[in-house]
Amino acid sequence: MKNGTAKVAKESSDIRAILKAIVTKHFLNQRNGSRYFCEKQIQFKLGLELCKKLRNEPVFEQAFPLALPPTKATRQYMDLAVNIGNKRIGIEIKYKTTNKIQGSESYQHHGAQTNGRAQCLFDIYRLEKFVKTGHMTNGYFIFITNDKTYWSDCIGDKQIYNLTDGTEKTGLFNANWDSCPEYCKDFTLFGKYAINWFGASSFRCIIISVPGLIGPKRARKISSKSGKR
Image (cartoon, rainbow, N blue to C red; front, side, top):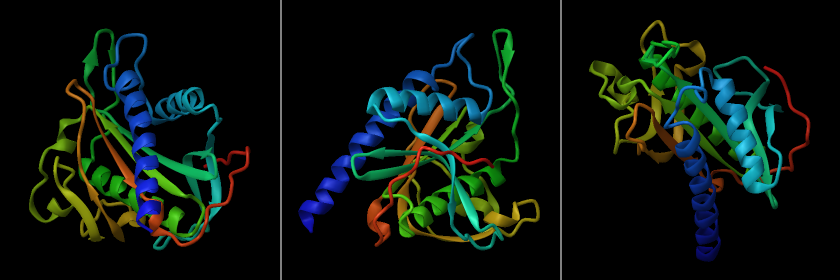
């Protein structure tokens, strides 16, 4: 059992290192002519770079039969999924920007940062469910932002949603503010996830590993077909 756990940890570390290298090179030091203005751009660029590194084409936005209360949906979508040997890796991405003007270009201002924090944590919860039901072997959540609000403290009764460096996220999250999207108002994280930001420029990133030990079922190999939201 110890050998198996060590192997899972090493594989997770290797993939995380690949993801961190791609994010650092392409997304944290953006320049005129190579900027990313929406999440879809990040998603497809990351998929392209993973294809080069792993020599295996990821599947974009594939739908899986998965009920996820409190939503009424019976299918859930994965941003990216890729087969590595007999492993199936799921990746969820969040990209939030603030309206900073860089040269002749400016980023969209997303705002609503407290809701954004809840959505980030809900994506980790989704990955746990994908793993537990056997749709994925393990998963990674990637959050990229140039909005310093996200790595700063939030106040009052919303502090449980803080994404400040060094905090650990686990347990029940029960949003009690009206503007929070209904689907992420009440969920529980079963794993323990350390928040560690990296990047020293205007953009910073969190990469969270969701281990395969959460789910008892073995993931099925993904097809080459992608779904649509």
